[in-house]
Each structure stands twice: as C-alpha cells, then as structure tokens.
Image 1 (cartoon, rainbow, N blue to C red):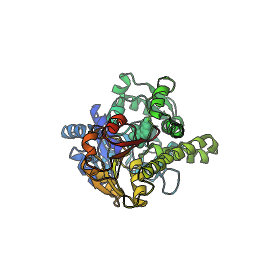
Image 2 (image 1 turned 135 degrees about the horizontal axis):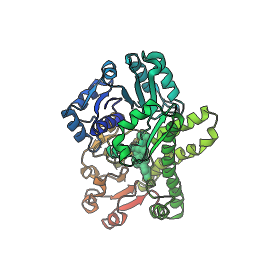
Image 3 (image 1 turned 180 degrees about the horizontal axis):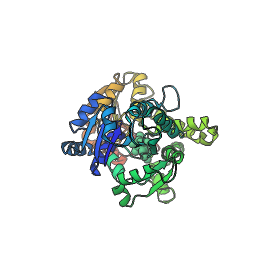
Image 4 (image 1 turned 120 degrees about the vertical axis):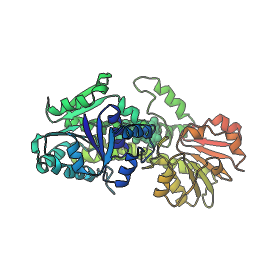
Length: 439
Ligand code: UGA
C-alpha cells in the first residue's frame, strides 16, 4: 500500500520506518526542513535503537522518503497517518492541539479523492469529531473522507519492537463496517496475522484507550513510589517489596520500578491532560487520583534533593555534584520533563556546582539547561566530586567499576535514584551509599 505519515518526531518517524518494513511505500511529512533532510539521508534526527538501520535500508530501497509538502503527500496516497505532537499547553494542564489541527487544515485542501485519515497522536477524548468536521469542511473530497483513530502505545527505546509487535492494535471508527476499517486491516495485515489482539471500537473508546493506559502506568509507578516513602520512614526496602508484590500475577512487577519517578514527553502531560478533559466533561472527581499520582512523582525529585543535602552536611554552596543521567530514561536522548535534569537544575539553583553526564542526551540537555556543566566521560566526571547522583539507569553506569571510581574522589559518596547500582559492591569499594526507598 501507499501511505503517508504526517509528523516525523519519535512517534511518526518510527511509524513511517516500520510501515516501510511491513512492505508499504511510505512518504513521511514534516514541516521542519532540517528534519526532512536528515531523514532522507537515512538517519534519525534523534536516538532510537535500530531506527537508523531501518531508515537507511528503506530510504536506500526507495520505499521510504520524506517531504515538507502537503500537496505531494495528498497526491501520494489515500491513507494518511497523523502523528504530530500534542504537548501540554504552557501554564495549563490541557493539551495543545494546535499542531494536530494545523496538520489537518493544511492537508485538507489537497484531498480531492476519498481517503482515510488515521490519527495516532494522543488527544483528549472528543477530538475525533473535530478532526472529521475540519476535513469535511475544508477538503474538496468532503464527507468522502473517513477518520480513523489508532492510538500508539510505543515506548521510546523500544519503539520499533512496540510498533511491529504491539501488545494490541486498537482501531476506532465513527461507525461499524466502515471502509476505513478494511483499509487499516489491509495496512496492518502482517501484524494482525501474527496474532496481535485487534480491538475495533468507536472513536471515544480508542481515544480513551491511550489516556487511560498511560494514566494506569503512571499510577503504578507512583504507587510503588508512595510505598517507597513509607519504606524510607520505616527502614524497609522498596525494591525487595516490589519483587514480593510483583510475584502476584494480578499486580505484576513490570512497570513498577521504584525510584526517581516518571518523566518524558508522555506520562506527565498525559495524566494532566486526562484530568483537564475529565474536568471539562464534568467528571473531574473521577480522576482526582491522578493529582496525587503527579504529586507523589514530584515529591521523589524533592526527596532526592533532600538526600543529597544530607550527604553534604546540609549545604550545597560550592559543592561539586556529578550527575549520571540526563535523559528521562535509558536508551533515549529525550530530555523532556527529565527527572534527572529537574534535580540537576534544582541543585544548581541551590548553589551546587553541577556536572551532568549521559551517553546520548547531552546535546538536548545543553539546549534545555545551558546553566549546567556537562562531561562526556562518566568516570572523569567524578574527579574530585563531593557527591555522585545516579539518576538515569543507563546500563553503562551500573557497569562502571566502583573501586576504580573511588580513587577519583576523596569523598566517595553516592545516592542511587534508580536502585540499579549494587549497593553492597559499592560499599565494599569504599563508597557511602544511599538510595531512594532503601535503608
Ligand atoms: C510511555 C508508555 O509506556 C507508552 O506505552 C506510551 O505509548 C508512551 O508513553 C506514549 O504515550 O507515547 P515512554 O514515555 O517512552 O512510554 O516511557 P516509559 O518506559 O513508560 O517510561 C516513562 C517514565 O517512567 C520514565 O521516566 C521511566 O524512567 C519511568 N518509569 C517507568 C519508572 O520510574 N518506573 C517504571 O517501572 C517504569
């Protein structure tokens, strides 16, 4: 099939490459000309495991290319995916849907034939009819256009795996037996034939599928982090506790790693956007739980600052702190709402001399936080540090030999914000070790 993918960020670029992998002819569209040029050269403009290889393969084969032209996109295919960003509105909890509606408005005038417009962006429930109305009003093809909703559940750093082998495929349509369903079933045939549970539903349920999945994932993380607070007050170990809870199959250990909490471009803004939409619908009480989920998550960052202060005899003034981690999680260069950088920034505000190191995210971190110092080498970065904070659990960090590292600083002290350093080995190597939620 021929199809376009509008918006080539973490979601769209991955989707475009994976659709080419499924054998389709794909045209990716993005208004950022620099991004289009990078993608056309077969490279990803961000770090995502295996994406470069896939982009290089399919751009070289001519099955995948990128453009900034909506006219070209509309002429190329009758199936269009939209994966533009829907960030949080500045100063509000609600989503900024301007990129989505702009994309729809710019595409619409070129749509002269029947087509399926499939939205993957995360939105508040009730957005699909607004997209349909815009298309029907501004496209020459009018009501010959069908809108489908196909929420995306991919995780950054597992984006390709999650796209090609998803846990489930959700397809939302305005009415039963729509033409769009046949088109999308053909598009995803290989995924469906591989046995992926495929749920066909209405627009609102499909929209809510994404909002509620992310709300649940955030709640699970904040639940174990709330328990971590109790562990800290009582001398228990939250990691062992999470293992114990996780053996109950109804609870499950996955997605319940205690630590510095969640960040990124999705979970934080999605719980806030979900609350905002519930408020608009008059059911805000239904989601007050998410306010607490957000508050617990933010308290983890404060707790990390408190633990660091305690290690430095109560003051940050002039203290040298090295932070391992800038990305919001390992194996990505994404620093949106990164817990590690939030802590780094706070410590800088409090007078510490903060040096941050990360295997992939330093360029993005520098742009967002020019006030901090950065270092490429996590071992050299510890030279003469008063304190080391482990805030993003890159495997590279837990593989560093703490004996070798201890020689670099006269005061080997570490606070583990992710619980993945082997505390016993670090202590044996001469480090004073503290960790969130652990004695
Ligand atoms: C999340 C969801 O997991 C995806 O299913 C969803 O499609 C995506 O948002 C999205 O809306 O696009 P992602 O933001 O890539 O994916 O990252 P996660 O792996 O879920 O991690 C989110 C944050 O939670 C990270 O900061 C991570 O360190 C933290 N986390 C995750 C924990 O603190 N504990 C955990 O057990 C899991």
